Image (cartoon, rainbow, N blue to C red):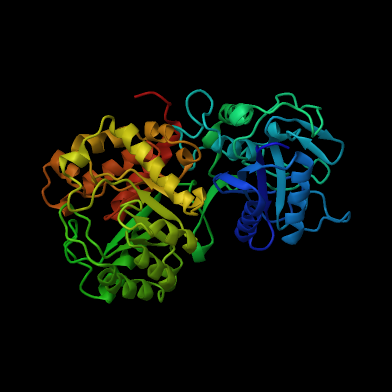
Length: 532
């Protein structure tokens, strides 16, 4: 076959190291084919045979020179290498370490009896297939990808109707149980088709694939879209390092701030006196309702002087190690707030499970490659310049702050994924207070749905982190000069961010913000889209 065609490959696993199995399959695909894009990571309840573990699902957009039947044989070979029983005695809808299926194949429909049918004849019935397909649609139903305003936000409404059971697989005979195929941009021949594997006319640049994905995105949105996510039936998850998979859509998560800096703008270094003081404050944050602890040793207030990586490690590593000695705190996600690759690596070795980079990779060119190896989530924040100069006019001038921030976040995310960070490990932060004017901060808070809609898939459906806590723009609005006096304003800002689709709120006063976001969580599913 001349040139390469695109195919949407669904991946699923519910035995053994599920994430490890998916990653091994992606690496195996990359040995001979181009893995061009990955979806979000989904966990789903099993269907058909329900007495088995939940499935972990993803999908890949692959560029291949193999015709469909040869590609299928390649997938079966990978499955066998990863331990799947492909013998006649294998349970049709039963557990499996890996499940790989062709959902769509560019320019062709295939009917090869019991061996291969492409597109899968039942993909439209399965929400666990449509959701990931919508992730990878370059232009979803209408003007957005189906993630948009309803956001990948938490809880609102009911579980995925089709739960998940069989894979969206293209292998008609085996009927795979759980691969929620979220395929990459794939082509759809609307009727299911009967041309042979060798026939069919390809379309330039995968245009037919995009039509298929737009249909999938439209069907997903019509069924409720992102509002169906956030239950044990169907939800997106983050691989949280040593803690395993972390569901983030059921409700808003509160990230408690643990500064071990002597010059923090908000708390004046109150927790910098000793490791014991930092651990005591961490315990208080957890007791107040924090879901995540964010440990930082570097002040990023405007005009602050930067520490070296070694100085930063001297501050934070003893604290992280001490937190790991506290049973309750060690079970919590521990985030390290750093823009240094070396600090990130040392912190994860000490026990951190997330990297929070205010620079999005701009202050240390080695950060993305380092995080790719660490296999933990990466909070990619938008900032221009450095903490020393970020509030200069050249950095705070935007044509359209929402569109510009979305475009710059997308560019940074593209660089991160090119370095090897899977999209399902990214958390996006528009960077309130970083290279923004007061008006710019307010516009971002007010237009979070537009920010999501402006991000290409799957970025528009990733977790969104906002950190308005005690920021200077709140002080200007309320007349509160002392950062510690801005907690009421911070709680109000947090609730507004959650109503707009934020999934994680970074906070100093966890108790106040926790209550505010619980109210916002209850209201958010009832908001009328487009009504202001």
